[in-house]
Image 1 (tube, rainbow, N blue to C red):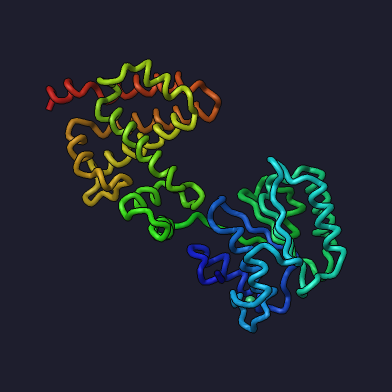
Image 2: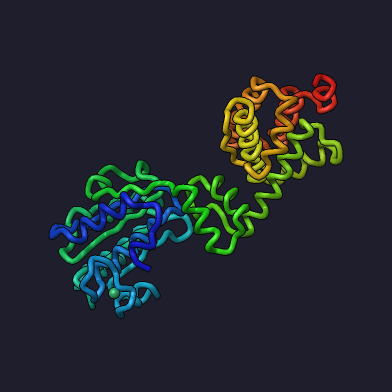
Length: 334
Ligand SMILES: [Zn+2]
């Protein structure tokens, strides 16, 4: 798998390809951007292109060097991952020892440090020493989901390569390639927030089930006809994540309902439910939907501040009842 197979990171790719053909390849690059958008894959392809026995500017995918990197067996390409939640000074010392020897088979020893935001302060200090005086044969690729958590002294010694969230069209195509059906892939891609690691097949079916729960709540305006409120609340209280997901779906529904009210050709997140949502809008006012949207954001914020999910869920149901009214009242009014 060579560079051309990396989708959606054309800017990063162009910067790296330029570096590869120039005579002044840097000693350290910082790849930063959200997780699940291809930083690690790009780092490995970069290492392959550098060590490939072929003559082209990108990896041939056939030579022994490419094969060894693909299988994680190249002696001059080292990948460091966080152990538990941190990358500690021992890890950095181990790679410094490796860098003190000449590369075995290639011109360069490539060190890929994935999850640099997990460097402990002593590890970051030790790494800084290597970045200040890198051995001539060293190439360090630092991968971080957030740039601003790294010390400025480290950032300033690296050439910076930004990675962006993936476009929904790429995510949809990749999910379909993995065997997900078109309709599900389209919904999942819209909700993946630009990251491929957001979804697995199981996640998608779970998410769709939770979307159904959120939709039922919305349809009944919080008046849960079949399940007593306290039972539902207890069910959600068990999981902050579940509660967050229902709030997320409700926000998307709210947004879709407003779009249906105000836009001539609305682009919906839940496009598969367009007809049903259009029916629902007839009994709802834009102002109420906007108020509900604002309180959903507020509840999501509370949840991040460790507020009890059961309390959050109960507040949500009350907001639904207050802002959207009961289905029977709305039906009477229409
Ligand atoms: Zn090759």
